[in-house]
Amino acid sequence: MLIPDMYKKTIFDINYDLLKEKGITCLIFDLDNTLALIDEKECPQKVKVLIEKLKKDFKVLIISNNYKSRLKPYEEALGIDSVSFALKPLTKGLRQVIKKYHLKKSEMVMIGDQIPTDILSGKRFKIMTILVEPLAVKDLKITSFNRFIERRLIKKYEKKGLFQKGDYYE
Image 1: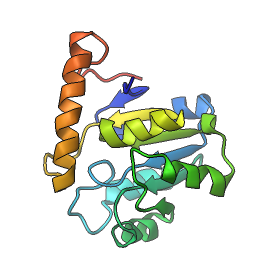
Image 2 (image 1 turned 120 degrees about the horizontal axis):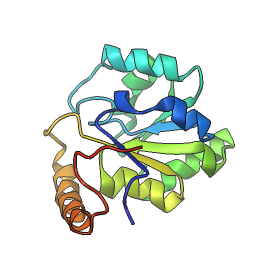
Image 3 (image 1 turned 90 degrees about the vertical axis):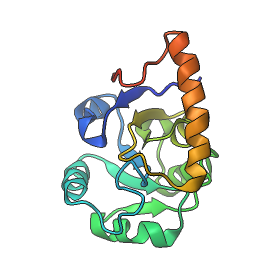
């Protein structure tokens, strides 16, 4: 099942203390429509403030299907590492992270705005997943297909009473 372990409106609504209590030491964020708008070239100030706070307790990374040139300004602004061209929903990027940082899967969480990429990648890798609402309606062209699949999945889950869009949970 592609139901996220946690569902929140934004990254600012996540209970990071609860994640710490659960043994999470590594936060892996998607970039586009999770941390920033797809056409934002510079990292938003409020994201910088949040990430600086989180770096005190967690290893914080970005995993994106985007190119390195898109991630570089965020790496520099946030002082964190990233994995580009991660091929989500494959687990390539997550395997790179676990190998480079010698983590256990139980210590990792994937945070993103798309079920067919971010959540599926995390579920396939058997790590905790957190779905957040996309920051904007505007998406990359390729994402429109993912959103179509996501709407169908959500409709199916809603009928079964497994997941309700807008009904946030921890």
